[in-house]
Amino acid sequence: MTVGTELNAYLADWAAATRERAAVAATLAVIGEVAAELADLIGRGPLAGPLSTIVGDNFSGDAQKALDVRAHEMFVAALRQAPVAFVGSEEAVAPVSLNAGAPLAVAIDPLDGSSNIETNVSIGTIFAILPGLQTTAATFAQPGTAQRAAGFIIYGPQTALALTVGNGTQIFTLDRKTRRFVLTHAMVAIPEGQREYAINASNYRHWNAAVREYVDDLIAGETGPRGGDFNMRWIASLVAEAYRVLIRGGIFLYPRDQRPSYRAGRLRLVYEANPIAFLVEQAGGAATDGEHRILNLVPEALHSRTPLVFGSVDKVERVARYHEAPRSAVGQSPLFGKRGLFRV
Image (cartoon, rainbow, N blue to C red):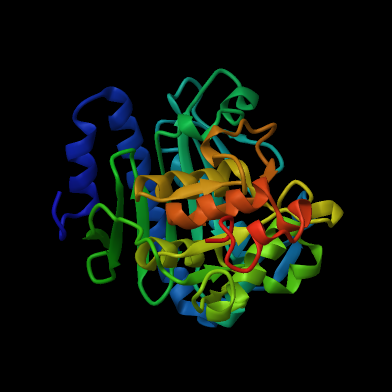
């Protein structure tokens, strides 16, 4: 497909091969329709009402805002018209049963980055499409390798849909005049060698030794073991961070740390890390929990958490090497010194 192709035409061409593909395409079309509606709502900001008002806490204790609930309700209602048996959402304790016997399930974070609603920073939706198995427990315990499609929508200055159906990563931009998504970036390839990283440095004191040492070496700049200066970015919106990495390269890190609620990581494996990992790998990058491939991890439950590191392969692999042999574990021998083999 070429740049300028509309989403529905892209899906129709891809879906012609099998019945399962046709079901996936129908589900993606529904998600795209809701995304266009949600983009209009978000674009109105305060004119659409108190979207950032905290209306309670979700099951895990996170503040739940009015737009979180609204987005969840919009996606669930629309997916009733798709071949979807179950929806597993961040905003619901348990999966929602829709169409018994339907072949697919959707795992979704209806509104990622909702802490940024009132600050006019990009927010989004993250989703994965999985085979629907006999039970919700089995369905949402599948590893990321089982995903049939995944993507995210970023509601920013442009509304864009990053999508993979296992044949590369494509980015579609919403044409606000026609309310249709149009292919603008075909077969995205994450650039390597970029000197940019994203991490919440305020958590430095809580990180493990490997992450601290990796970041220390970046901060040391051209006089340190990396021999060059690096820029740090942190938006606190996963979709915005992921979009930047897809377009511009670099690396994103959200590691586990020593705090009780962060020891298993903070992001959700099924509907945040897995879709992002699928997109990133299909764009030639890599995604791990710091050491292990995200898509190979088996979720314990719908809301299981994980650390997440993703970006260009060279950078993600380097983080894994720091975990294998942190300086604090091997000591300050000349081999691992300022220009040692490990750090180069």
